[in-house]
Image: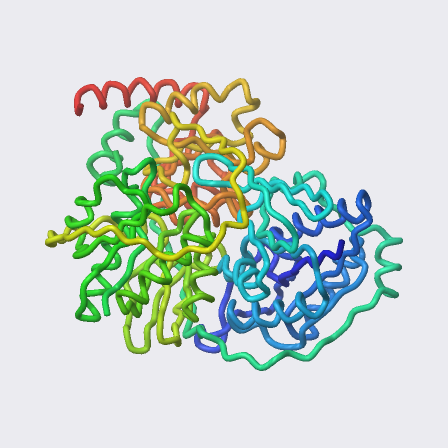
Length: 248
Length: 318
């Protein structure tokens, strides 16, 4: 089984978000970049398929050279090879087009991508890759077993979960639950050393016209100070929620 | 050319989110000088959509249960039939599942997590959340057909009494390739996605055995229950209740955080909620900087007392 894990290169979850060039660009100054947490769950599950079922696991990112440390980290965690599509990730559609090309060229059986990235939060890429590469698709995936070419997946639905069956080739959009937080791996020294020798292939992008463009960013308006209510005066809280906030 | 909107139902009954996206669709249709056509699947009675600006309903009943690929096919054909240039979806799990298929099928740009009516229709520009609610982004949709996914509780319900016609619509569908084996869904509980009010507990509650009062508070308010990341990592509560940056997003009208300190990742995930209340013993907890109302106090005393007050309030206002 050939698995491709799509890796987004995103600001660390604790990053303060700022913008530059009159709020048209994300300010990368002083920001630490990591593997998108949703993708990390997927990578960890892929490692399980590698170790238990002998799968070959590649990782891929669409981005400039500055994203390579993130791909190297994925290699240090245990992926066999990495691919970087050498272009700026402009919008979800153009990223999905680039990824679909990699998926088709590499004849992958299973594509694992995080349900969304924590920067753009589009939640579009996994499904678009499936549609473009003509593969089956399960989104919000919190469980996946593969047996030969059959797949059983659990997907989250609003208020519960659903178990579905399908066949490879398959794309999943995954989230926490696919593996536990405690299963996530930190690269060890041996992994880091080995990662240096693993192939990181740079491929040139195909021509794609983006369908969306970012005009500008805006930070949420600063909020007023919290209104403190004494624990001995809960009637006041009920009153505020009813008459002032009008939420009960 | 109308504006097409996918209005979701459950057991034949339209969901509240359906009325919100219909309201949004009406706002877009007004900007474009056109009308709204809604697509429902197996809805028993879609007349309520007329209250929220829908002129025409196409009800599809040749698919018995949700299937992202087939629903996307149905919506694609419906939008072609109506000559729709804009398609509106919600932020539900199902909408987000089918949206990428529809986007590729219609060769349409798609913007998710949109929080306001378009700031301009030419170029078509929407405001959406990004960086997990830490920022907004104005995005231009540059294709002929545009798909807008509207954030839950962002636009609200707007009444626009409209004369409504309903017709059965039978799209041509391909074979399903993802088959449902079983569904595990709590029918007696409010889901986080649909909830107006969410009551959430953190590590300050000391152990899973203390969740009774969280559930009771939620019950009094008709709220969904949720929890912080450490609580789900410790296995005190199921993952499905984890809200925050890598968990479920919350966009409720009221979010009550009990014993949650307010890590930046947690706050990002719940920031879209309109009114936030925090109950915590530590006045230095970061959540107090993000909340509208705060109580510095012991949850084990405050929550039971609050439940009693709310019961009294509900009895008086019933």
